[in-house]
Image (cartoon, rainbow, N blue to C red; front, top):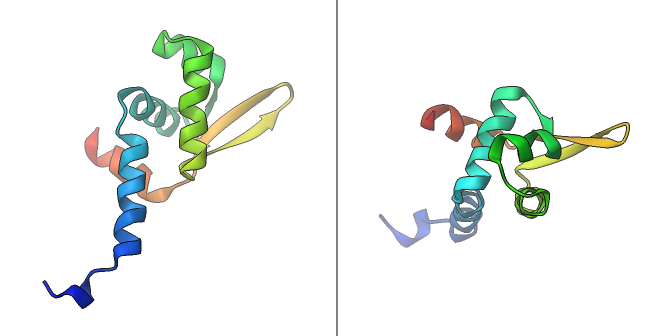
Length: 94
């Protein structure tokens, strides 16, 4: 492979996505969001049996990576996977 064939910026972006989904809790959150077409933090907290603060920290990382987005529904926020590449990764893995 020649150096001119490598787009370092693209590789860094892809690596950042893999890092973001590489944690077991975040992977579980993403899998659940893909399968359920979105849900709120309370639902995730019950499924993961994890404290709300832990779930919220992981959600923040996924949002910062551009993998999920939240949509307000009254007093709660439902989260959805918006990154199509991540959806494909989850489909392949599971």
